[in-house]
Image (cartoon, rainbow, N blue to C red; front, side, top):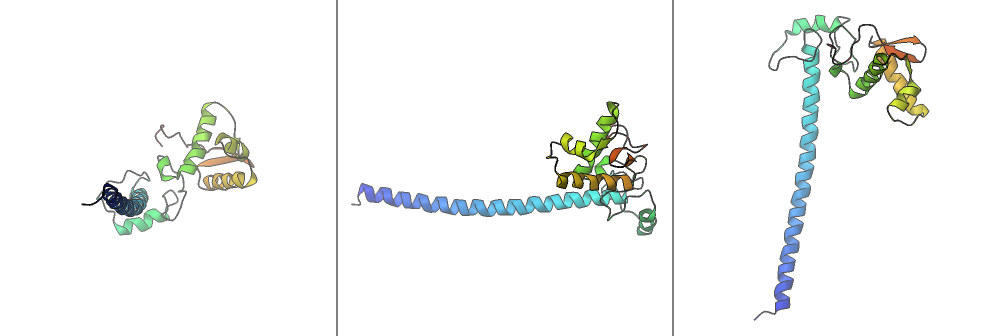
Length: 178
């Protein structure tokens, strides 16, 4: 007859092996989940970009399953007002949605929209960094300046005085039809 301690040790060993198997399976599932989420995000971004590029009016409301004539895409991508596929910041045109921009660019536009709504003047990059809760250090300020200059070059912002940025004329807030 086996001893009680021997039976307890055997059950403990069985339980430890089961825990180890489950942890290995959980790690495998976690890694698979992370890879699947990353792939899913890539497809979401790709679908959004394709929808933006294929939308005839520059908005991101392209209908799923709708395909554009490839001959039309050449003329659309060469147009000054069209969103270019390799462009992180598309050229602004009336009616283009803010959603075509990355979150960082949308934050800049939102800060300047709030500034206009409150009747305040242009915003410097140091002030933007402070508004966003960033450390006001040269690396952060220069990164914001680069983004703001890109928005100026593409018609989203205006720079009335060097280093001071405001919304370009015609750029409306996200709820105002843009």
